[in-house]
Length: 187
Picture 1 (spheres, helix red, strand yellow):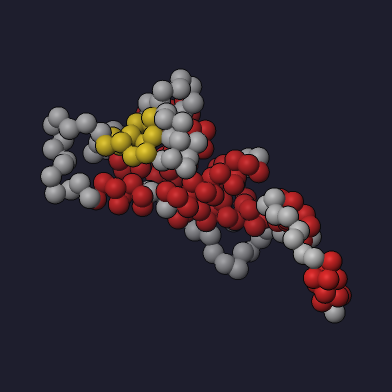
Picture 2 (picture 1 turned 90 degrees about the vertical axis):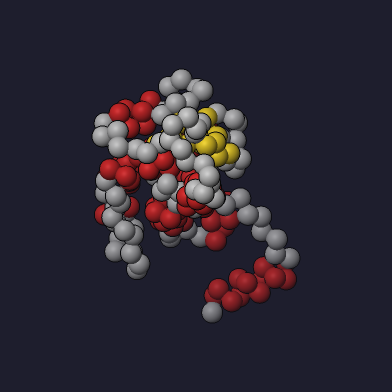
């Protein structure tokens, strides 16, 4: 994977180098900051956004001879988050994640999915929320499922006030509404 920022995607590049070189081309994913990642199409196609974007060019575009890679701007995805998304997609293409089923059989992520995936979402809260947003924007269902699982584990057992703090939601109840809410919780 190529990037304008040296070292940002070192681990991803190593994993792709291990692949058989069976890709049918490269797509350039462009982060919010304008950093470009050269990603094998087969890996990038884990994103339905990429599939949709590439699908519109099938009738006249893919002459593998001299055509340049298609650039797909991702204005909602920061460089650091995009590097993590590509890392996820690269790993997923080599070792698909165990599907997450509900009801959840545990509140421990490592008991639901493989260890690599549990470690992948063991990130700070801001990065986790940005991964949720990126997975949703890029339409990567398995990544969205994994990140939402991590968020659900994060808020499990928390009070309403703690959840409001986690999601940065202000308490907009008036005194009367708050009293009514407290009385309802007691019954």
